Length: 241
Ligand SMILES: [Zn+2]
Image (cartoon, rainbow, N blue to C red):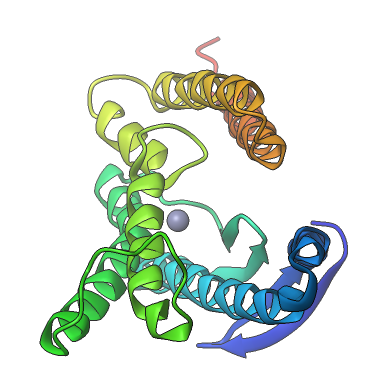
């Protein structure tokens, strides 16, 4: 998985920062220099948001890893990238129920964080809707609430490499072969990534094009993996000769 920096060890799982993670602070500094006198203030706030976001991503991945552990699957490590994380499991169980629950555990953590923040803000008498104008750090809980809701919904999107893709596969695998279910979830992922990238291009949101490319390649990786294991299965099939 390329160059990476060990960040910590939590619940007996090593957590690494992927080298691309440094692109996020560099991009923030690049964009915030336009704010003139306020540049360092805005940079500081965005760094703080990035840190909070990464913490939520880490908790999301821990959700996957700890649910997997319940089913006897060990997490090799957790890798944090600027657009998400990855809990690398020692093989995903091919029991649809277990795969479904392991995939659901990550987004469920984000929904839980959002519910806790929402409850806290509500009890404190605050508003749950973010304002367009940034009003300093008092807005942070509301912003994090919405970031977690977006993480929850984005990950439930039923296409690879999102968690929703894995959940879709585990549902489809009840009616068709595991391989065919993987192909459907993978192709759906690539199609959505393509639509997303074209939309980002038309809207001149160039960093988002990279997200589309990344999602497309990650879906391709899943498809290749499925083809390899399908090939192995056919080779290992006992011949009746
Ligand atoms: Zn996830």
